[in-house]
Length: 180
Ligand SMILES: NC(=O)c1ccc[n+]([C@@H]2O[C@H](COP(=O)([O-])OP(=O)(O)OC[C@H]3O[C@@H](n4cnc5c(N)ncnc54)[C@H](OP(=O)(O)O)[C@@H]3O)[C@@H](O)[C@H]2O)c1
Image (cartoon, rainbow, N blue to C red; front, side, top):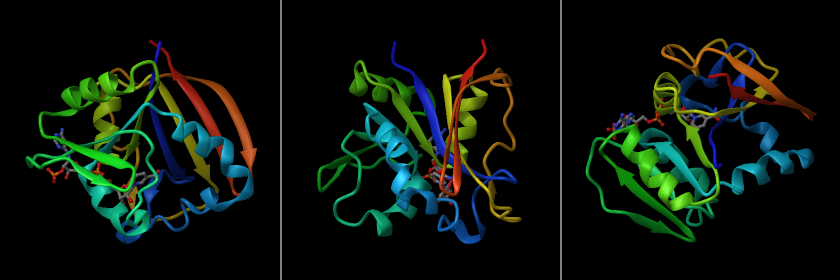
């Protein structure tokens, strides 16, 4: 049964990005040699859900050939035409998180759907109890300021069972499944 996984990096003090949306520290692990397993798991998703700010912020670093072999569904309140960039397709969904998930599941077929952030959509999917698995990349830094990943989150997503830990260079990868 395909899962909905939230796959994000987080600092020790719970931030998903530093001041001014800075991801340089929190995503530094992705460039390390032993990052491949976690990156490959992300790349195996059948579809990805992203918030519009994450889409906008990614434009510069992703360049003309964004790193998404799977369809990406971008939540926004604005109606926008789909966009193809390199091998990546971005479909903009303005009917809310459940409709975006419905479209992502349909596109993903037997594969998992990954919520890649940012924090606004992550918290909404968590609060609605729609996340089956947390894949957290815990980065040993105290950012002090930035956008908190989990605050606020309410609803049924309170309890998790840790299913796997992988120690890597500059990051600890943690997997949890939702206890329902
Ligand atoms: N640590 C990580 O792994 C990681 C991963 C990804 C992103 N990030 C960081 O997270 C930050 C972005 O997070 P964020 O919380 O500011 O923004 P976000 O979640 O990426 O996007 C927020 C936008 O999504 C749209 N949206 C949200 N909920 C919606 C809904 N229910 N219906 C329709 N549209 C909806 C709205 O777009 P409109 O304004 O267009 O309506 C909203 O402004 C950035 O700093 C980014 O770099 C970190």
